[in-house]
Length: 397
Image (cartoon, rainbow, N blue to C red; front, side, top):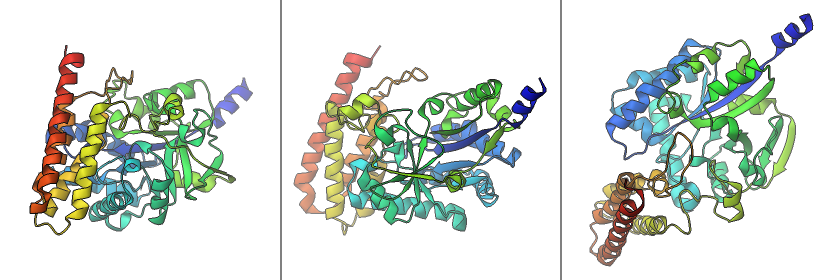
């Protein structure tokens, strides 16, 4: 009996928790306020009340500017304070949350730089990121090499990125990407796809001693899971829990292995990878709406690159940035996640992104854009037709 108690006393779960704070740039104020009030403030408050707890957090640049414009200066100040205290490690990302693997190099670089500018504006010298979060963890080697050139040291990816299969990653191994030489952290998908605090509390009850790496949207904590029992707050007070940031975790690892990683996302399935559709949620070769969306997207990018001296370039570029957000393409996938009873189909959300893309083209003033504008309008009309045809035929009622 005494031996059992001694074993329990030394049992420890090391939790490396990565949180992704993001709302699309086209989200209305009410949607962002709800996320702030129900999730972001809750997470930050929990950290302030538990000084030994440490998380790694990504805050998308477009969201950070939005919450600042809504008057949440106290929230930003509290995050800054927690970064100073080393309870929060901030990472780099892409400012408007696009699928980087589907963009040209120049766009990838621009998104990284703008994100850095926004975070430095709000956090000053506290923003010195070592790690990088690719939106939706959509890895490919081209993106990874650009990230490496921007002096980042590590990426967090889903475990399927290691070998195209789940449950292959070892939490005691220091992985390197052969193509970019970036250090790689792999999240455990099973733990990340559930409500993490409840899962870990169950492991504590079962006296499991292990390292758990989770990566989820920050909105999971309050907005998507109400957590009536306050398991999140209970977990943070458990003596059996130890938390460290990702950079701290990487410093502890010695067993080095180098791998050529698999193009993938944190939602990819083994079948999708075998079918060579690593980003199927955002670009399915059989999805006519997504195909047309990318045609319009690429046209808008081409025109912005061609007419950088246009007198309305600022507005054209602004609309394009907002239209590049992954949500436009995600809502067009009509994928059933079987998680919180959600299906990724919403014609209004798709339209928000499409409207930004066409406004980008329309904004340009140069007379030479006339024919390209007409081409863009034809695509726009076709996309709208496909969206609502599909909605009324398959998803209405």
